[in-house]
View 1 (cartoon, rainbow, N blue to C red):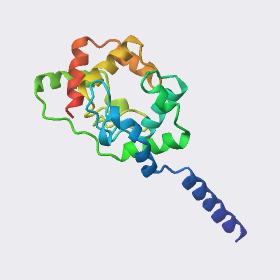
View 2 (view 1 turned 90 degrees about the vertical axis):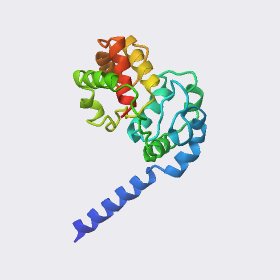
View 3 (view 1 turned 135 degrees about the horizontal axis):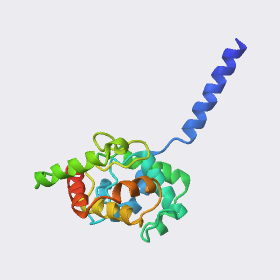
Length: 193
C-alpha cells in the first residue's frame, strides 16, 4: 500500500512538473506578433527568402531559435528579436507555429522540373531525415510546401558552409555535391508538395 501511495505521489509530481513546463499556444501566438512582419500572418511568409513557419515542427522551431539566440546561427534580422526571448517564449513559439496549418504548395507549373527534383530527393535520401512526405520529424525541418526561393537559398548556404547551427554537417554533406540545376529542381519539387 505504501509503495502504491509513493508511486501515485511520484506520478502526480511528474504531471505537475510537466504541466509547469508545458507550452502555452496562446502565449506563443501573442509573442508571434513580432514574427508576422517577416514570416507572415499565421506563419505563412509572403516575403522572398523568408521561410514559412506554419506547421513547422515544435522541436525544430525551438532549436532554431536557440541556435539564433546563442549565435550559432546568424542572421542580422533575427538576432535582436531572439535576444529578447526567454526559454518559455521559445517553447511557446514552437508550440504555436506547430499548431498552424502548413502552406500547401500551389499548382505545379513545371511537372518535368518537379520530376527531376523528386529524383534528386531520392538520390540524396532526403526522406531519411525529413520523412517520406517531407513534413519533418522532431527537430528536422518540414520542407514540404516551403517557399521555393528560400529552399534554393538554404541549399546554397549549406553547400557553401555559410549556414550553421543544427544539422549543418549532415546538410552540408548532402548539399555540397548538388549542382545548381539539382538545387533548382529539388526546391521546385518540395515547394509544390
